Amino acid sequence: MKPKKRTLTYDFLIKLVSFTKGLAFHSIEEHFQENRKDFDSPYPSALLANHVSEADIIALSIVYPRLNPKIKMIIPAREDILKKDFLQKEFRAKGLLKLIFTLIDKSSIIPLLLGYIGCVPIKRPFRDNSRELLKKGELRETVDAEWNDLVVNINSGRNLFMFPEGTYNQDGFLNQIKKGAYYLKTKITDIQFNSFTFTYDHLTYPKLKLHISYGSPFRLTQEQDVDSVTKAIKEKFGKSYVLTLGNLTSFILLKLGHHTKITQEKLFSVIESVKEKVQKKYPEILIASELKKGLNSGSLSTLLTKLKSGKYIDWKEGEIQILEPLVTIPKTLNNLKKSNIVLYHKNQLTHHLASLDGIWDSLPEASGVVPTT
Image 1: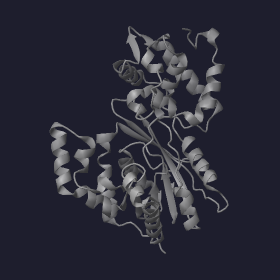
Image 2: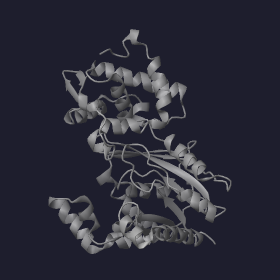
Image 3: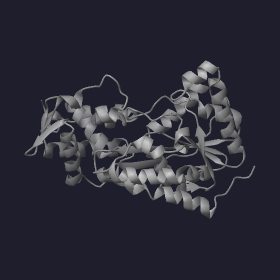
C-alpha cells in the first residue's frame, strides 16, 4: 500500500492545533539528531512518545512539521476527547475561559478536527470501564479489536503516533511500557520505529517550557520477546530526557537535604559546576539552552519564587533554606507534580542519575562547592 500523502487541508488543520501552543507553553526547544532539522518517518512507521499530559496533543502538532516524509497519521486518542463537552468536563474552567470552552464544545469543532487529522477513539479499559467489560467477558476482545483497527489504518497508508505507556506518567518519569509496539512488530513485518521524548519544565519560567528530543529510526526483530521490546523502548525514552534548570536544581536541592542553608550565589555556582562536568563527561546528555549558554539570574529567581510559594524553601536576603516538604516523599506518587514538584522534576533524570550521582560525589567539599548542613 502506498502512503497517504498529506494535503494542504490536512497541514492547515494541524497548524490550527499548533496555534494553541502559546496558551500551554512559555517556549518550545527542539533537540535534533546530528544537527538535523527533521525527524525520520519512513512508511510504515510507528512514532513513539512518552505521555505526560493533555498538552502532549499540542506537542504532537509541533512534531508533525518535522516528519520526513510527511504523510497522514493515525493517532489513538481517549474516547472522551471525541465526545460532547470534553473541554469543560476535563478542565472545569471558570469565568471567561469557561465561556470559551463551552462555545468550542458546542461547535463540535474538536471531534471534527481531530477525526480529520486521524485521531481514532480508544476505550481505556484498564482505567475507565474495565469492570463493565470484565463482567461482560469483553475486555480482551475490546483491546484486540482496537489494535486490529490500528493495524488496518497503518496498512491503508498512514503512519502511527503512539504513546506506549497508555496513560499519563504520574511521577515525572515513565509508566510501565505496554505491549503495543510488540504487537505491531508481530503484525506488520516491515514496520519501523522512531521515538521522541517530551521533557516538561514547570519551574524555570512563568509558564511551562517544552523540550522535544528526537531519536533515530530503529527496528524490532521478530526474535525479540515482550520484555526485550519494552526494555528497548524505555531505554530510548529515558536517555532522551533533557537536563533543564528545573530538574537539575531539583536534583541538587534534594542532594543537599533538609535544613541545609545555602546562598543563592553558591547555589548558582553548584548548578554551573554540575552542568560543566556533565558537558565534559557525558556529552550525550541533552542540555537545555538556558543551562548551556550560562545561567540567567532571572530564570533562577523565577524558579526560587515558585519553590518558596510552594513552601519547599525559605528564601530571603539571598539565602535559601530547604524545608521539610521538599524532601518528603508522598504516600502515593500519583500526581506527584502536585504533591512534590521538586521530586517530580528530579525523577525526569532517572536514566541519568548514576552519572549525576558520580558527578555529585566528585564535587570537592573543601572548596566550598558543596555546602554543609
